Length: 122
Image 1 (cartoon, rainbow, N blue to C red):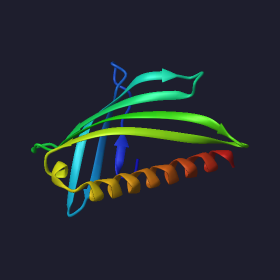
Image 2 (cartoon, rainbow, N blue to C red):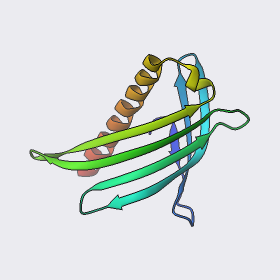
Image 3 (spheres, rainbow, N blue to C red):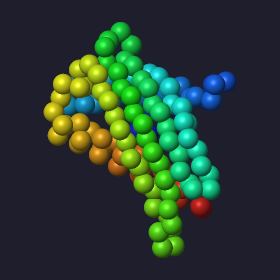
Image 4 (cartoon, rainbow, N blue to C red):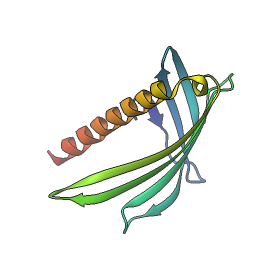
């Protein structure tokens, strides 16, 4: 994810994460964990639980991300569904700003994944 880092897996199977996001006029640095709550290799589907907090503030984020991969012609189509809850300063911004930030993050993540896949294919 752009602006983010994922660490090595912990003994409990979760991964430490850090994410810095610019949301409207503010920038918030979150730290937390990502846990794979469901994984079905045969169905090519996974569900992640992301829980993060900004140190020294009331800002927090919790997201459930459902990912699936389906055949699409000669390639594949990746589908993401997210359910996000924000608390603190970011929660007080309008839906339009938050939707734009989410779209921008997903576009950057998709470009990053595409670069990795195409780079691995060469």
